[in-house]
Amino acid sequence: MIIHVWKIYHHCSPNDIAMEFYENSRLGVKVKIPFLHKTATLAAQTLVDSSFAVHAAKLWNKLPRTVNIIDDLDSFKIHLGSFLRHFPDQPPVTGYTTRNRNSIIDWTNQSGGSQMDQRLC
Image (cartoon, rainbow, N blue to C red; front, side, top):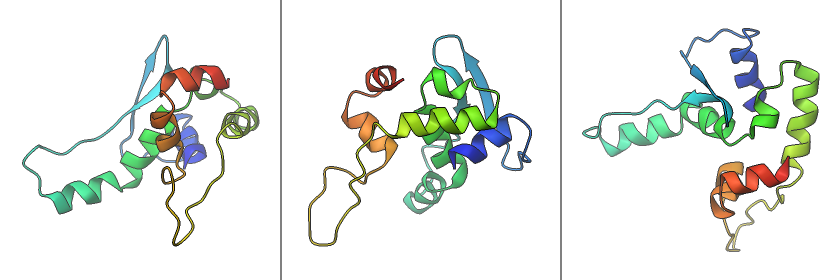
């Protein structure tokens, strides 16, 4: 997902879902997360939250500036791999309780968000 967002940002893949990118001097390249109106049904909100546009944007926005500003795909993959190595790989096992769903979003939220992002890269 993250590599596909990089490709959309760098015009290597079509932006057929109209992802909106913006640059922040401190955080680097970020994606505007689409939202539904407050009066939307729970079912509609669930569909939107699980869509590629929302989930991929949330993942991309967790990347530190040192990773998301890289223009070369191979360099981006190397830096992305270095960033991801800092997260434990603890997939859920049936019958056992886990700390989270083993997602970058969960790990960064649980560990202090952007503070962790800055320490990792």
